Length: 249
Image 1 (cartoon, one colour):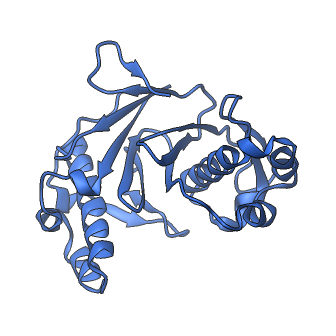
Image 2: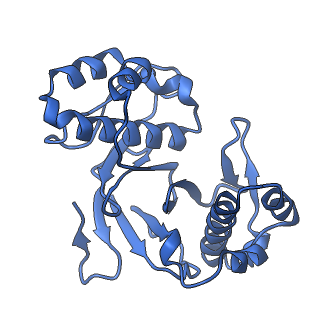
């Protein structure tokens, strides 16, 4: 399955993804060529009220930008105005599109966001790579038994990369499934950065019975990202707009 990566500071409306494709938009908050308030017109009244309740300006701007941008993209796919895109919430709280024609997911961290659209359940995660004082403790707390062993078996100089790969891959699968942090130790992903990304085993009933694929990549310098979908396939990360696609490491 092709994963087409778009990087555009204007976030234009998008055409629906073709069969066998996932589309991911990278949003650099500092590189946008428009003010976040220009996305307000894309929001519903309820979303505008929610935005107004944020007391921290950058947090409000990230919410408005991410929600407005995904509405603009989905509006282009569905040929409806952004504010009319029928987004609702599943029982688990995950935003979903009414009617199930498309699947989407949004994630953001300091300075960067990822917006994903596809025809199968999809999840994305992004983290800014930084020093984590209790990295080993987080692995022991949230990773599975097999992952903890794999992490400890790696050379010390590979563990930071393994931690971020594991974290974003596990979060992407959780988000694709519409699950919660309680599920993190219910499946195993490949932590070794020298091996292909993969979901190695699934034990939790909420995730079992479905084939999951995951792929990590570097969406921008200093960031770790991952995308997951419920189809068992190889995920090929490509830059959109390049002739025949340009592979992304």
